[in-house]
Image 1 (tube, helix red, strand yellow):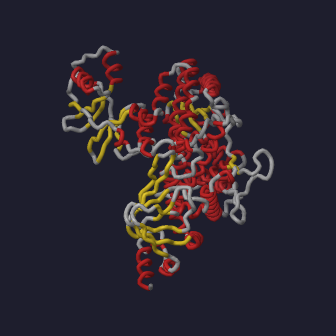
Image 2: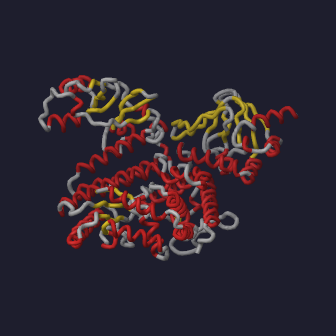
Length: 633
C-alpha cells in the first residue's frame, strides 16, 4: 500500500497543477486517490449521462473526448498520459457534456470531487490552472452547452475558427520568373484554370502575385502591351499566411489588405494559395464578399442594403462558436469600411476639404470592440488653418459632418445620446484645440473632464490624414506621464462600479423595475476591465486602443498585468461572449439589444466562470485602491 501511495505521489508531482503543490499537499490528495483500469473501447463518461464524481488523471494510455449531435461525431480532444478529464461535469454537477472513451488500454488515477474542490479553494495555483485550462476549452473548442442543436450543425473541421489554412488551400501553386511576358503569364493561367500566379525573382524568392483582376484592370482596361514583363503589373508586397493559422486569420488579412489571395507558407516554403472562393466554399458565405460588395457601392442606398448583412455575419459567427474578439475584429473591419465609404461620398458632395483632416472613432468603436450596431461615437481633427480661413474651414467641416451623421443613421448607426459626434461643433476642431482639450482634462481632472477623457482617450483614426491622430496621441502620452493626480482620478473611476457579488458569492441583481432579477454585464463587468486596462496603458504610454491588444503589450511593461494578463484576457473574452450571445438572441426576437442578463439563464458552469471573473475584477480593483490610496477621492 505504501508503495502505491509513493507511486501516485511521484506521478502527481510531475503533472500540473499538482506539481505546484508542496509534498504535504500532494500527500493529502494521494491518500484520497484510487486507480482504475479501462480496456480499450470502454466508455468512461457518457454524453448527457451522470456527472463525473472524480477528476480523472491519465497514468497510462489515452482517451478520446467527443460529442454526438444528430448522429454526427464531433471530436473535441484527445488526452494522453498526464492529461486529465471530467473537470467540467465534476464542477457543474449536473451532467456529462461529452463522451469519453479509452482509445487504448488505459489506467487512470481518480481524485474525488471534494478533494479537488478543497484544492481549488485553498490554492490559487490550482484554481488558476483549471480556470485557464477550461477557458481555453470553452473558447477555442467551442466547448459549452448549446442553446440549440443548430449551434453544432457544422462539424469541427468545417468551422472557420478551427480549420487550418493548409486544409483548404490550393496546393498546386504555379509560379513564373518576374521577366515572363504578360502574354505568357495569361496563357499559363488559362491553361491551368487558375486565378493567380506567383512571381519569383532571380533568386527564386516570391516577390509578387498577379490575379485575374490585375489582367482586367492593368492590362485589358488600359490596353497595355502584353509583351511587357509580368513584374510591371504584379501586386506587391505579397501577403502571406502560415499553413497552421486558422482560416479566420486569412479572412482578416483579406479584409485588411483588400485582397482575395494569400500565399500559404509552411516551414519557410510555399505550401499553396488560399482564396476568398476557398473561404466561401468552406462556409457558404464570406465576410470578404460583403466587403467587396461595400467597395463597389456608389450610393448610400447601396450601402444600406449591404450593411444590413453585418448582423447576419455576427450571428453566424456566434453560432459557430467564434471568440468574441474574433467577431468584433470582423465587425470592426466591415463597419470601418462603411464609415470610410460614407465619408468619401460626403467629400464627393461637398468637394475636397480645405485642409487635411482625420476622422476618429471613440469609445467601443475606437477600441475595436463593437458588438451589434452601437451609437455613433466619433470626432474630427483638422489641421490648424490660417487665421483668415478659420471660419470658412469650420463651416465646411460642420456641413460635411452633419451629412455624414445623417447617412450613418440610414446605415443603422443611431446618433450618440450624449451628442459626442463630429457633427457637434465642440468635437469638430483643429489640432491645437484638441491639444487644449486634452491638457485641460488632464491638468484639471474633475467632474465631466474625467468622463470625457475616458471616452476620448480611446480614439482611433479611421479615415483621412492619420498623422493628425498620431500627433495628438504623441501629445497625450507625453503630457499624461507622471500625472499622478489625474491617474488617481481615473483609478477612482475604475473602482467605482463593484462587481455584483454578495457576501456569500451570490449574484446581486436588480430587485425591481424593467430589469428585475438581471445584472448589467457592461457596467458591472466589461467597463471595469476596460477602465483598469486603459489606466495601465496611460501609465506606460501604450499606443494601442483595443483592450486585448493593450493587455498583450502591457505584459512586458506593467507588473500587475504581467501577473494577471491571461486571467484578464480570458475574463474579458468571456464577458464579451456572454454579451454578444445575449444581444444576438434579442436581435432574433426583434428587440433592441441591451446588456442585462439573468444569471439564472446561464449554465452552472457559466455561472461559476462569471463568479470567478467578478472575483478577478474585485482583486484588480483592490490592487488599484492600494496603489492609488492617496489619490482615491
